[in-house]
Length: 455
Image 1 (cartoon, one colour):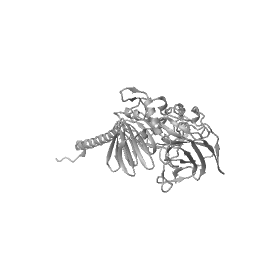
Image 2 (cartoon, rainbow, N blue to C red):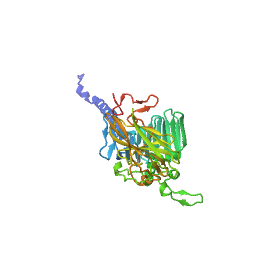
Image 3 (cartoon, rainbow, N blue to C red):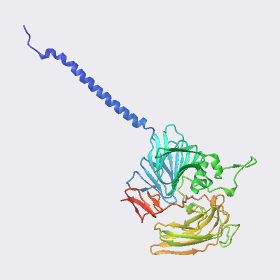
Image 4 (cartoon, one colour):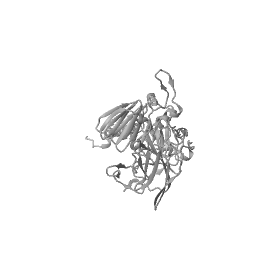
């Protein structure tokens, strides 16, 4: 007898199908978990350790913004944590100091601008303007330390160096170990301690650091501060800068004389102002009397379209440059007051005022790096207001000759740079030929503020 088909009697035939779906399901689970695990590893371990960056000290006005396109904020409280994409800029006579969790330290000079590009696994900065000073710690958990500029990337491991961006050139000074640059065209170059990388209109080259590089006020103050804090600097460079004992020809060792000591660096943990600096002593020498072969300096000041034009006369003598000083009192002293460094061959300077109002004083001194200001000019005062500028000479018969009080006063240092234009440090670059400010794409130059701003 033929038995009718009963599907239930073959129900066991469906079990392999269910098992196959279960295996497939678990396989998909494992794939998903694997992808999640790899992703988690990449974000936590593969990208490397995160090194916290903090703004730990400042002097003057320092501004920051969390990313491009948002409003700038003035730094009021420190320490301030800096995140990737954060941008920091300094104003006139201002500085900012940073500490990084990998042990590195960074200092930003006046009219400078820098962006923290990355701080996980690597530490990457993008510098667009001004001066930066780096003490890069050796840290096995950090893959690299870079400073990017428009021409390429500087890479350092355990290196002390500076990057200086100007209108016509970029210079990187190496104070310890070596610095490598990866140019945009894929070429590379290396500079060792005592050398500098120079990028200008004539090309790219590695040269020996010159005396004038080390005796620049910004560089010298950084070297002194690093020396004070026992940070690594090549000993020969410290000797070359006059910051340490030298070996005489007879093999004996002697300390530099007291009057050859450079200006002390400011305290990085203090927001210094000129009011905190003690006044300089003068030798009561009449400005019209030439003393010890040093120049008698007569200063004149007048209003110009872009600021205050300063002209002075002075005999030739044994000095290196002029220091042009500006402040709100007649007794201007280098380096306690704002200043600019001018070539010895020049006897005029345009101080751009940017719409400032009030009474300002100006003074000039003949400067030598080993003795400071040898003599000062008379002071000139200018009353700036909306109706115009009136110049009157301030009587001042006290000219300091061979004066070293400015070297021991402990007053704040300024980084005075003669090539700065009004828009530099604001995101734009001054073009000398066109006498205009070239702003980044999407920004325009606003004359009233002296800055590049979003359209």
